[in-house]
Image (cartoon, rainbow over all chains, first blue to last red; front, side, top):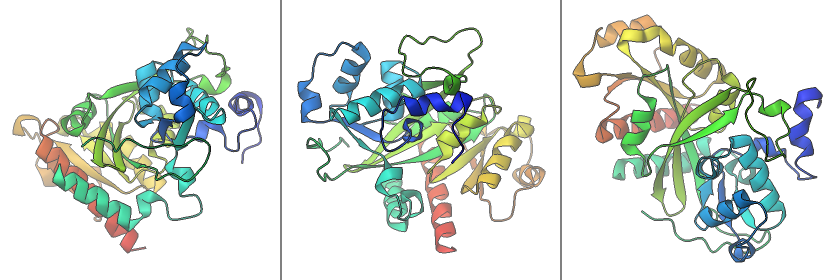
Length: 120
Length: 198
């Protein structure tokens, strides 16, 4: 890992002890509100409220950024904070498959994608 | 097809997560990337932005606003729900090739890439082809033939791009859903062949 220096260090500080650097959350990672998240309808930060509302069904981090109209880096921090608080669940394929064949290199996954595309 | 509404429980108990995968749509400015994505996406392509100076800005400060030294890099993307537990995202690369930092983010963990080519501006795609080769990402080159107009023969284009023989080269119409579907299927098959070949 590159030693944190100057410009690189801030996003890591923003993770507040989370186990993975927030900037590595995949763009396609799916965010869904947990039970607590569904109940948490009012928040001091309007962007957080909006995320919890749109993530009643799973949305990618990229969709969160686009729909809440924040830059992708800000969306990652907001989602990571909500995850730390137990308000959302994040299904990040890079994390779920850590140490195993990546889904993009897994023949079973690729077959399902190919067949799904054919059926469209 | 709608998502099976996930019964996400609190905490970290095991839940059957939906899996999300992605395919990258690359190519020069104005070659039809967003049209291509829109032809198969179940949602209107969405646009998300990254700030060029993000890494050096306090991202935990929500009041952060782009200032005059900040460049906004935009990328468009779409979504295809393939099954209740499988979603495919299509990410278009930013129009300007110089934003490589964004390309790393977009291509990380991708199944592969479609490099769209406009036969009138072949050189526009060289950067994307080089990038995919360097990253070792499975890719194919798709000649976007608007209205069937081809200013060069298909073989000529392929030769001009100096593609390795194993890189698939196809002709497509980015506005046509069926054509775009076929390109994506071809790419996935190419990725499968690479996995099988080790």
